[in-house]
Length: 274
Image (cartoon, rainbow, N blue to C red; front, side, top):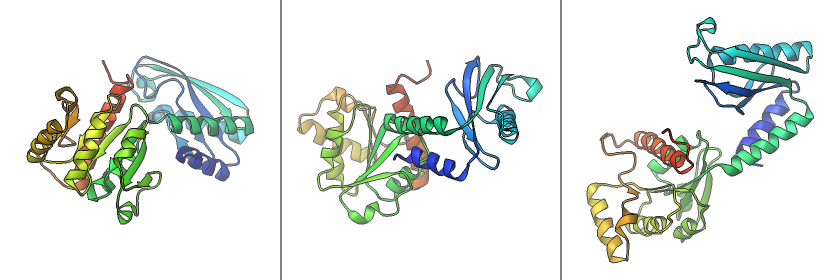
């Protein structure tokens, strides 16, 4: 069972009575798109349809259905001043008690959503690797930390996969299309080998390497000596997270890099704004 499905199953186990809220239609500027969903029990919620007053109204309606044992309900809400929300669009919500059929369908959907998530491979489980794994664990990606050292894979965040291997470059070759590769090992020579393999993947969404201007120049020289191509080198992001902020604390680098990776992944999937 995938991470999302496990969390969903745990919610169902703790909530004998729950209602499913689905965005049936979204017109204009809205917090979430059609198809977004969340679950509501008398005490807790799972997921979100965008927050704000819209979500408060939906939660209240869902709990009303649960309390009165009403199978279905609906809301059609303009997101204007009358509800204290100024998005300007309109959202139609379908609300229904989540019976066994709905629960099973949601678990299947959670499995499918997890399976479809883009892969992000972090090569290196040092301070920045751990911080970046923690940042990505909150995002809709499948994060895999690859290491040659057993101890570096300890205490990874929940939901982050780990791979212990003596030949990390093989992980690059077997990764699915559209993957992102972030290289930050303890060894520059190993970094170069992995980055070289990642740049050979024309279907990679992102290839990034931690480092400085000197490391970038050294890698460029190594890459061309080993048959690298200028067009492929141009795709390398280094330093990761951008060079405009000189804060080198791991958590800061991780936050900036996570945003950078998510933008690249969205662009590769055609989800970036025009």
